[in-house]
Image 1 (cartoon, helix red, strand yellow):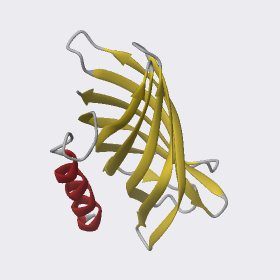
Image 2: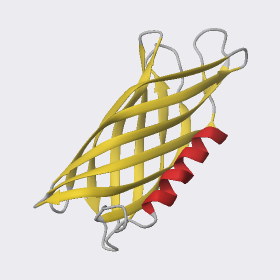
Image 3: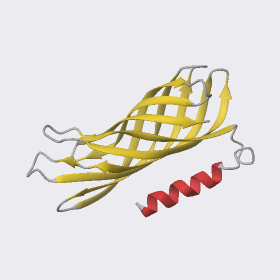
Length: 169
């Protein structure tokens, strides 16, 4: 988890001066949701995390940006084999495409790294990660997004994160 946090803090410091980096606008936010493995009988974990990013280019109602997402487990899930508890920490570095002037459709893809911890083992993996979502603007100028993200795959089973993110712009 310390490695993940270091990477996110490094990206946050890079985005702190968005005009100097050629980014039009930076943002950060918090996400929470259900992290699960697509396997019958497994109960999902409840994760909470941080999202930071910035817009690289904007053409009309379409924007392309860079985004990092870090999550950690708040409430452990339960496995179908032996009833063991499990938790997951994840880090994703994405290119994010948003389509829409007000409400927007979001598509993201990039690098995902995760660590699954059970009562008896720890597994570290990385893989291509992708997701899609829908964002709604708030009166404050901030954004509320609902997303479905495939963090990666383990034993031919998808690791999915269904989350709600509040972005401060």
